[in-house]
Figure: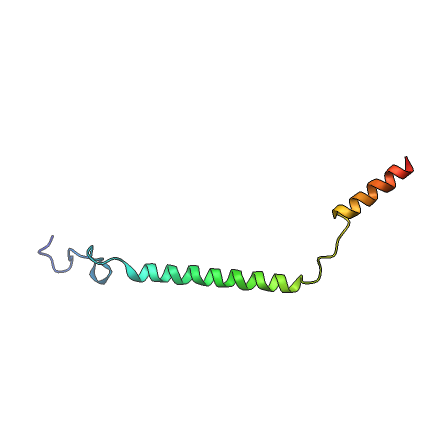
Length: 76
């Protein structure tokens, strides 16, 4: 089949030279992972800023549970 010019024995520009690593694909993946890390850090910072000052003890805190247990003991 090598004698037929309409059917070359290579894939054209998509053929990968085994002596050269596929650097373009690796570089793209590095950029994608770096972008995801940056987005995650920004989202974490925004959530921390949005919830700043809301760390007041709620009904599920240990102090409230001890008060509830003390009130139940006083009723018994």
